[in-house]
Length: 354
Image 1 (tube, rainbow, N blue to C red):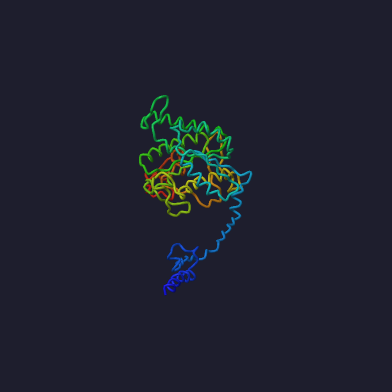
Image 2: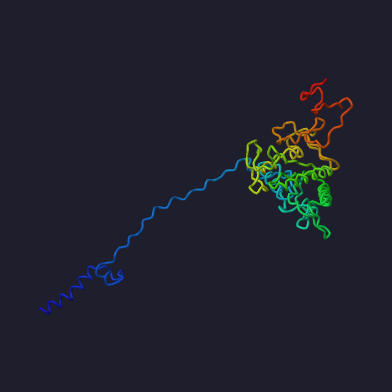
């Protein structure tokens, strides 16, 4: 009996091992006896088929834009951050025009006061030699409402000497532009959110206009396009399509995409006139006289014009539109002007003549 029991005890592990999993797959004695628990393999969804990238086919106009003509007219935009915004707008305006190349060379924080930071008078000849432009567009002065430091002396903005010194700097810069022999446009500054800055900028614009036109350049006034009906700074206004749009950033300084396009809109007609793009008749275009002011005549096929505000109108009817500072001289027979400022016989004369 004892022998039988011993044989059974010997045989039991053999039977268990015979039906147990392979020892190589076991981790411990329980795995050998009861078998290893099968791990459930996670089931992943099948990978999606690779997405084929859609091939973008450029339109003929886009292909033409990327291949500017060898004789394309070259516009060089120089100045501060306002000039940079105008350059971006011009780049969009002429993006699909292979006959015009827009070159932007700006220093955002530059001006006429801090010439130690960037001196435009010294750098303009270098830029002209490098870029070889056909026309120059400049915008400057938005950073200039600050004291002038010269010869170890600081001149406050409110001092009378400041304006005299600043005018001399404008004259030197416009002379440098004139000496390039290239037609140049000076883009006036718009209003800004800071009221004191806007007041200063308005006075700067008057100085720019005087000196630019004296040097034979053309001053582009954009003020009315960026103010409301009361003449105050406006974040929004009419865009180039006549729709209300946001023109300025929240800081009241920089420009939105619509604002940049509007700056370019003011430059479009003068530039087209210079390049003879919209007219076959030479007498319909802007004449650039290096020794005199620019005479601007719009082409005959005008399809749109820049917005005109009431401030552009002459107070009396003895001046040209947009030129209230230079009224014409009345002849003796035209010297009578009624109280409302209108000539007798005109449709806008509502006075009663006794």
